[in-house]
Length: 240
Image (cartoon, rainbow, N blue to C red; front, side, top):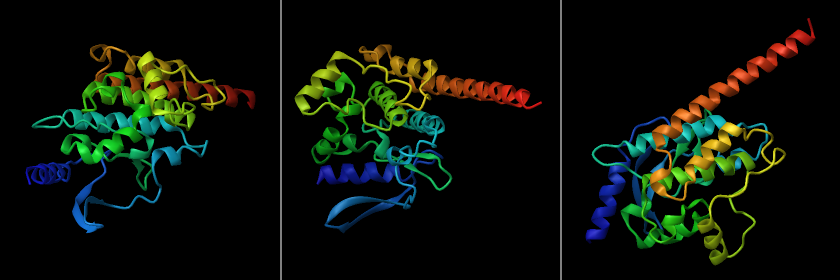
């Protein structure tokens, strides 16, 4: 009974969240096979992993929204909320094309029913969480870097590795290699790779905070805008 009470209280807290990059929850229902389910608006554009399969979609604005949503969760009062399961399929796309975080904080509500969900996100999981799956700010930052890599490559990190034991050994060795320009449609700049690497410090205490991640992402987007303006000016000069 205490477990159910704790879960209901946690879900109720989620319905009170208010941020442009957080999926709004209306409440819960038990009408689906008797299980407790969160109720939210249907997002017809699907999730971020599906959305970026169209190579014309630039993942950078989505990642700005993800970082902003995580900052809101980590700064939540009276206590921070850790996502714990960040990946492309847990980021929905709003009708306006904005990133909306969903499926967060579930591992901290009730342990056992969500262990399967943890296994499903292991490709995005930090080394320390292999031993203790409890959510943390540092774990979310590692997962942000992996989600960035996923959206740039349109594939899960460590996606070529089969078998849970082998995957855990590979994660424990450190971050993945940098993908080539063709794989990322030439969008994974040195600036973005630096952000990812700083998210992937083996020592959790040395990783960026989500506030620092957001500043670096904003700077990289501004730099991209400057590059595009310079490119546009050069193109115009060719035709004048």
